[in-house]
Image (cartoon, rainbow, N blue to C red; front, side, top):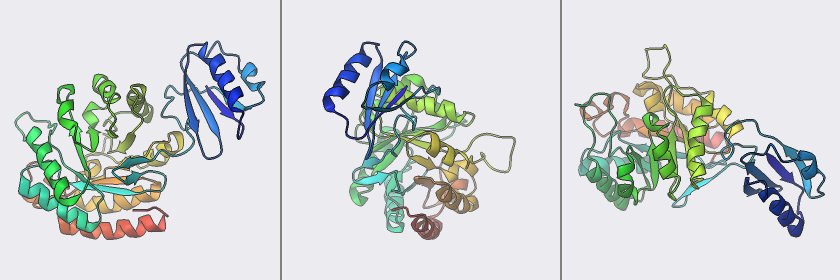
Length: 336
């Protein structure tokens, strides 16, 4: 249930309303926007008389919410959420680019790529320390050493770092990571999501390759339920019958998510297609569709990359793509 209060309500009457609602055992999320204060009621609201709430002179409107996701629902939080990471803001017109290799391979590689993507205008450095691979024999990442190398690259460039977590047992290793990524395969790893809900770090949640948007938002809801509201949604392509691309980028998911949720939306054109020449057009399409950020794979030597070289841009190619990204993001009124 959503209770929208009138502008500048009496604080005493607000407290009286809150005390009355709490008797029903519901959790109350208070959202103060620029013009309106909203009370989001989470829990069993079936015994609450809507007319009793409407009768209060500080109440503008009351409506029941049918969607199972509450905290991530724009009805509960009409203003766009902005995620601030060391001064780099994502959301509400603040557009950002996350770039770097699929996996961290060695110090020279990650530092070199970090310096090049920063020079081109990237705001964050991505790199996999733990790599989920289809084959158990493929490169699985440098693990803790990979995180250390990312931290070193951050020291040399100042770029905040983004890397993927795969297990509850690894959480302590991520204490110095700026944004923790949850990959598509773990989107419904609910025990992991619950634990991430207890930490005070931004979580980049990727959509599962066969999950609906409602399931996607319900996974984000798990993180919110644990107390962490710093969630960033990432559309990275879904599995369809098409075989010419690695996945199919669901570009419609961007405006849909922006309409039904207040959370920032990132698009990953690299994983969505698996083809470097599609990264640029889909990046531009994503910005036009309303994306708040892009996450792009860049490798200094894609042909010899230990993972996902076929979808990785060279630093030179990334620089060319960034030229157009800056142009269209400016045209769309976004701040890069």
